[in-house]
Length: 248
Image (tube, rainbow, N blue to C red):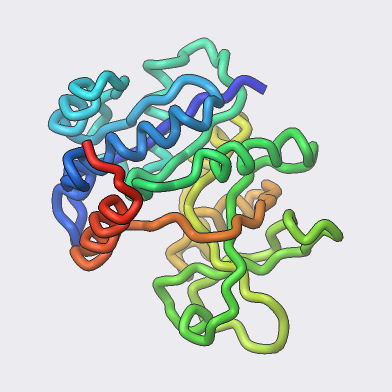
């Protein structure tokens, strides 16, 4: 396995404009994500940027960034555009899509996600989930839930469905988080296909992959990475940085 880690990022966010450049105790958020990815020690790391300002911030921190078309429809399309420049010959057979709004994502969680591709030969795409049984998460349409066929180890499972809808009945609710490790062929098949009916219904890209017949496996993480989607999340991330003494 020869992975490359790519972090798609753009400035045009509705709820938090200029989010990738938001300062978290002296560092832009995108730089914090970059450093966590580098600490996973899986392979080269680059930011697939939709804006020159992001490229400049990453390069100023010693990282690598590729400027992509700002009008690309999704982060996955941004990955493919960056790959065309960074690895046109296809040397990297695994592509890890790391969201640019997880400034404290654990390097071990990134590595664990990628390891599923080795552990499960049938796995085309790997991701992570957190066990979360609270009624609030079950009912919250902003929280994506995963339905899994869990393995006996209780730490990995094959995904059967993802939904924003409320899940009823007994049993665990798996809270999905947006880190993906793709076999390169799976990423290419996924991005070449048009949006699928279930994807449009749920507004979840991964359902397109499932409708194409691609197999998704998930690794269970012990705690959720902080995801920054709005100003309140940003303040929470800043408070966390102060708490752990992580200042630039």
